View 1 (cartoon, rainbow, N blue to C red):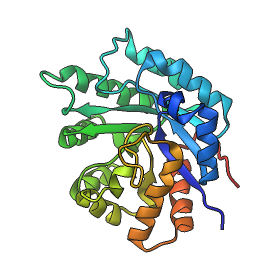
View 2 (view 1 turned 135 degrees about the horizontal axis):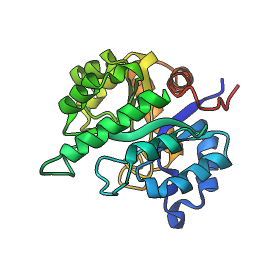
View 3 (view 1 turned 90 degrees about the vertical axis):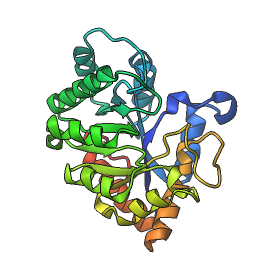
Length: 264
């Protein structure tokens, strides 16, 4: 049986050519590992043109549009800029966006306001949200509820919370995505959540070049390593890698309906 995997969250344009080679090299290695589609995720708007160019080069690479909550980039008329770029057919999601109280401190009203702008844009474009949250889960959920984000849905990227927090996101109609962190020995809380999230609401990702899974922990990550995460969760849940890959890949194309289906 063919193994079909998706990397639902990576940063292809952040990979270091000195160690990873060209983006084409990275993609070819990932394709050999069974990865059939990549979502190249935006964190800065001044870098978006390069990100979009990569997505336009490959039918099996999609893009998002967004400004990461920790980025200090100042964008005039942020709403209009997001709307303009988000209308592109290769852009299938809005984000990553959200709240991060770990790296940013002080009065973070600006971060919460930026988050609300992204949610509004996602609703108008009818494209799902990619949510980043760190040390801010309850505020993230509260804003999603208040801004009626359930009307558009999305994914909790690189989920690092517990099962109760996963349930809150699931109740809003969001998917839960697990990165290589789930393979770490000390990630018992995340592993517990990964054992309970319904398979029809789960995605996997690398967040490359960050958070490489075991056995590559501590090294630069790349999309092909998503297979290690898939194997770990499939084994934990007692299903085959082929079945797990098929289910999470179908989930990806269900959520990101604008992505071109690059498999048969």
